[in-house]
Image 1 (spheres, helix red, strand yellow):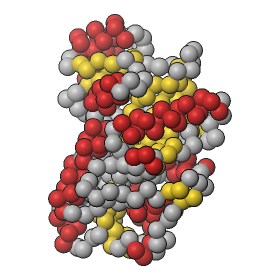
Image 2 (cartoon, rainbow, N blue to C red; image 1 turned 30 degrees about the vertical axis):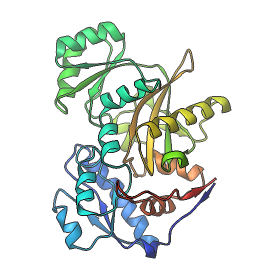
Image 3 (cartoon, helix red, strand yellow; image 1 turned 90 degrees about the vertical axis):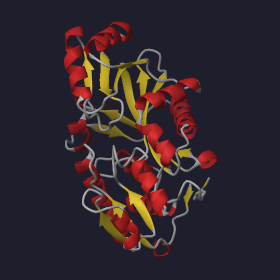
Image 4 (cartoon, rainbow, N blue to C red; image 1 turned 180 degrees about the vertical axis):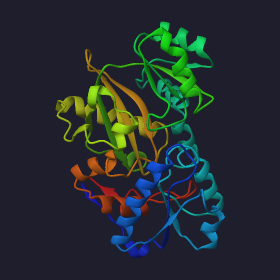
Length: 325
């Protein structure tokens, strides 16, 4: 694969949006700090910008030409900041308004994937503890309970007894008014980044994730070194190819552009893959998976950042494919 990396001097004055007001603020700052350092090292005129401390209108006043979005979760990955940047006419990295909004909503994502015939675990949307118990009876044990519009496993519980349903619902509902109950798929956990837009989208190498006791939670994702990541994944070639094709189709179905990362569970018995969710502003920390996969595809962290910045666009402006097979 040949990666067309733009000349950093042509990218103008760049704001790296980080921090923000979501539950993932700390991770956003970690991602943004890494991206900012990489861009500056490669000669980009890049500057930190925290929307929690500065109004977005300052972006226009300060003469920024484009934005690298390192905001995770709400107000950064859900279409809201994308809409503001559209109004300000400042191109930005990643998915547009509609794709960002849909992808952030796990229930809406599942509805679209299911309508397109793409496999995703069985699920129910619940409004109280008793409905969570009914979902447990229907979906089986164990069951995942999580906010419908959060990331980084925030508010997530793996429920193994009916008695635990009420507490799981209470935790998830602290983070969102919509709570999702999901069938638990036991097997290999993998993730697959995608780069590109439309028909040019390609899957990067799949990463097999092996977390302590199978618990890939917030701490194991970002702050501990006990989780093992395998890239190459070690999966059979035919299985990896099938998952890569599935992930690209899932990405394209939602209209995501430039980049994203799709999480997948592989059933231990049938080896059937199930789509869990898609991230449209993936992490760029030292533990993050997109840079890890990109490195395996001979695309370094700094080059990845500059490439993504070169893909910055507005919804009414087409992006350049930027890669050649």
